[in-house]
Length: 569
Ligand code: PEP
Ligand code: MG
Image (tube, rainbow, N blue to C red; front, side):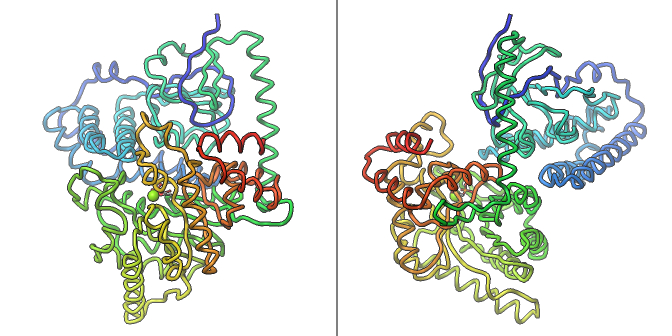
């Protein structure tokens, strides 16, 4: 009898296939393990690390050849973790107490993972999975446990928590869908699945136990439904949906080279939000016309100590070069809030989102900020770059930033290092204060990019990460729309460009009214580009302006959303 359970759909799409349980339990293997003497066990750790590194290197190369740069980067991070000298030291120390190579490896990984797990930031908490993943992989090598082997038919990978490396090492065509008991949108397993557009459902909790290994299921990544042992009628229904889905995919692929232009010729630049230079290639395949937000804090977060000017220069240069002459907007580090940086030793705060973060740190820590600016200016020589400052609340902050940029140029000149003089300098409008002050700020900056992820939370006093008030977090709230419109008008009056890099930009209904307000650029996670493009290509700018005029007369965010769906579907 068919049975249906529901989780959270995080990657849309339908998949039908047989379950392959991943993320195996190795307790039985561990219990039966017979360790040798200390030297033997020590050598086993070294050999296993080397073997795992070599497998990872092969996988990284394959992924790079297939232009799967983001996934290659995740495995590259695993390779670095496997070869981390601190980890090796910890494994050796644990060997002293446990006397067993696999136990020592797992304990060392568990200890490092626990540090990350205790952090407030979900991004860091998810990195704990990576560390455990690497540890388990090395231990599995010693224990002789094989990775899941997949036959000809693609499978639905299912597990409480699946190691990202398991997904990344399998060819895309072999994975029809992914089901996770735990998992969130920021887990690396989900990031990999997203880059491959694999239908994924997470957060099933205990219900995952109802899914039989090897049994047939249907995964609906849009609604979050899992149909266990589907009957013929259900299979026929879903096969029909898959057919429609494939037609849509082919249609989206055709859209990639086309501009986002209205029926009467108004063009919007659709750009990509990235966290690493490795994301650029994939973004371009979705039709991104450049990078509208490079979250540079990930360059800092991916390193165990402060990356110096040269390290940063390399990362920015690579991103800029990969943009092939298209604009690459690099946001200076947005540390603090939900993105702590352990090695900066910032004390815990009552309200981190309202605390010591972003430009507030940069202006106090010139030792960090000046090298970052110098690195971007130098990288600017290799294409078209812009510097974007997060969390600005007043003009004096921006003036202080401008002064540091001038100082950076002077230092570079003295040092005889080449830099670009045409790097634009703009700000994120992500605080209500900045949005209100845009008529003044516009006199000083080269551009505005509206960061709605924060602007919505600050304007509505709704914590962006609190699920119990998620229903109040609405980018169509008239207060938010009023601030966006004010920003767009101020930009227009001062002849500067205004874009958006918050998640709102990836909402096709929002895109229409944002374009009508005069935003010329929308930056989003790359897979969202085709949907937004399709909507923008389906309207005229006159029609969009009429819709905007109607929207601005409405008094409630939910009402606005319903209205837009009605007129634009
Ligand atoms: C934003 O606040 O909208 C934004 C793009 O920045 P982040 O999500 O990194 O805070
Ligand atoms: Mg922000």
